[in-house]
Image 1 (cartoon, rainbow, N blue to C red):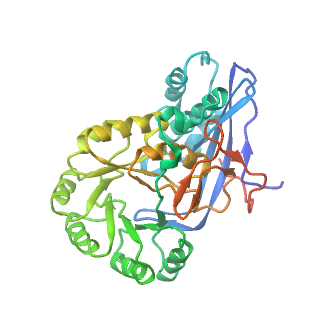
Image 2: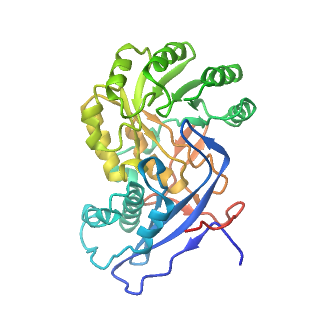
Image 3: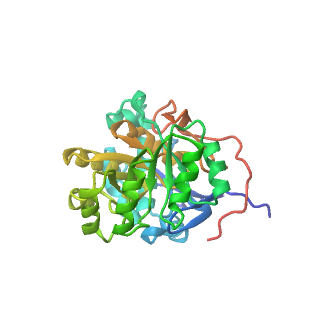
Length: 365
């Protein structure tokens, strides 16, 4: 048997007016991706497809281990997904109200369903997603390029590979943080953003923020554990750098309770459950005068492009997940000199590549 990254589901024996099917795929990283709490060479993901009147929308689910998800859980949801009670005659919101509860609380699977529905709706109505969101595609921001935790030699290599990107996002949260930062500063004077991924305590964070303020760092993301909101509020009072919430901010329900402890939030569509919830978070953050970053997991162009459609509405972007993999099966958002550019076309505007580099073994359920 020849193995490849793709595996596909069969069609459902009962075909309602709107069809569901899925495929699985293994995305491979160019470099081992290491943050303060984990390390990965690949991710097994699930693509979902919604089809109506011969038109198909696509969505992507990347399991978030931090929040108890797994590829096996995603696969089970996909294999048992039931469309028989879905009424496809209503509005997009009607679709989402019926589809998203079927994710059974799994945020990444909700994201996949949400994105596929938005893509399908846009294609059926000849409308790009950014138009529905009230966004202007020319106003997409610059994205940062992520430098994961690694050996000093590999970090230098990563900085060289990031030559076209004017902003670097540096993963910290280890005993070697200052060495990592000094190494990068020896290579470049670019603006940097730091993400500690909950890797510091308050004392370390206070010292690091004071020191990082001398290193042309723009802000620090999630320096302290999400469980220690009180300490984060104290850090915000004393830090010369802005503090941005990531793990503390999953969806719109979290924003009011953390608003006083952070200067801004990082919205990730995979984390909040999709485009509709992401837009709700943008509006709520603006009302509370919080800055907004739009981030990502390690994702392919399907999920990244969905986020890019929302990106003109935010202050900062960290949408480089598709750049960090070497076998992206889709074409969508492109990046030139750090500038995010949306593809043409209705819905997401993504297209399947004719050829995917380095096919590998299929994920094991």
